Amino acid sequence: MIELKNVRWTYEGGDSAVLDGLDLSIRRGETVVVCGPSGSGKSSALRLMNGLAPHFHDGALEGEIRVDGAPITDLAQVGRVTGTVLQQPRRQFFTDAVDTELAFALENFGTPPPRIRERVARVVAEFGLAGLDGRLRELSGGQQQRVACAAAVTHGPPVLLLDEPTSNLSPEAIADLTAILGHLRDRGTTLVIAEHRLHYLRDLADRIVVLQNGRVRREWTRAEFPALTDEMLRAEGLRGLHTPARPRLLRAYAHGPSVEPGEPPTAPRRGAGEDPAPAPARDPAPALDHEAVATATGPREPIGPREPTGPREPAGPYGPREPAGPAGGLTLRGVRCTFLGRPVLDIAEAHLPRGSVTAVTGANGAGKTTLARILAGLQRHSGQVLHDGRPLSRSQRQREAVIVMQDVERQLFTDSVTAELRLGALPERAEHASGVLADLGLAAFGDRHPLSLSGGQQQRLVVATARLSGRRIVVFDEPSSGVDRRHLRSMTAAMREVAQEGAVVVLISHDADLLDLAADRELRLRPVP
Image (cartoon, rainbow, N blue to C red; front, side, top):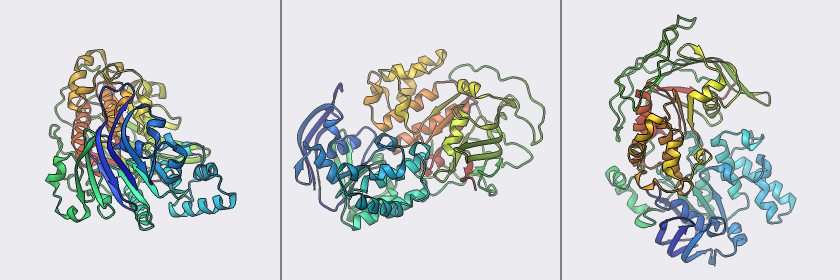
């Protein structure tokens, strides 16, 4: 079905080949998982299979590529036989509404309108999209991912290519996607999935192909899966084949319609499991209740000096307001946000302490990214956000906060990795840029253009800029999409270091591996009833 023979691909302006002698054959109806370290060529291989390279991504191509027996010279024909789901779904949308996006490919192929309506209705039911009737830009990242998956199969292609399809999905949404992929596989669809998370694919994949330096390093067949040990996977930088257990985290102090009810666990959180974080040990965080706010203590070794945050504030009606020092942080009071008259976030009271990492979790559409935008001063809302007991306006938050977005490509502005890192760094921290790059596995890319990096490398670069920003509020919104197992640990270390310097660190993630490594407590959101 798909043949790549001795393929060499170099992006225009690149100084080395991304794919270098890649040989890969995929049979009709086969499900193949393509994995490997960030930058190994997974996304580039998929771009060659669907014709985006070299037709839209300029570069030098050598070797032979055939899809369904034909070369990729006819892009229209390749589009008929393949559907694609990109890492960042908003990059592949052509319309602004769910129904028109699902119909887009069929309309381009001249499908009769009655057939389009029939097919769209079927896909809406299969993918559970009936409630997503608004504009695409108003959906959460996970909801957009579901729409992208549905749009990729609406025209019934025999080949479906998926690039990190679970990067923004909740565990429940991953289970739904797994069921859909199983249904497509049973129907004979050829599935090629570039992915770091392997656990949801262990019963679907016929082969796991590991890339390194642009060529196949090794392959495992379905029969070999049971013999794969965690040590073997770790040696390749791969995640485990078993579904990661949800870590038991202390509940953050919070209440309101958007806050999922539940008591915090009585026992301290367990350790970091099979893959402990390399960061300095954390002091156990005490349980939170409605009378007091937890404190996070521990040694701080800041990269550079921080300005004092002011004197101690008097007590408030919900317990002590946060003093300057490790017990301070952000307090949210009556924070509400609506889109087109529909409430999307409603928090009566919440506290996010400084000096520790607070995970914000919840189903897709629960308001996690909306909360991130509020904390960074990018979203209008009612209510108050206070820092160390003092109200912090939106404009002040824009100066005090930094956010690592889901789609980090929108945050890259310069022509080199080194320049990007220095752009947002405090002057006294700029000299540490090379060390931070080395910690995050980017030391060899200082002169590269940021947009020439892989998705995972771009993600780590923006994490590095946040590390050197010196801001008092640092928000990471799904930072582990495109990040392999090795770099989960370096990313965790960066978050821990920011927290130990006294910043309020908020981690929005569905990634149980990352939550287990990095988070101290959890604020679990739910859709507004």
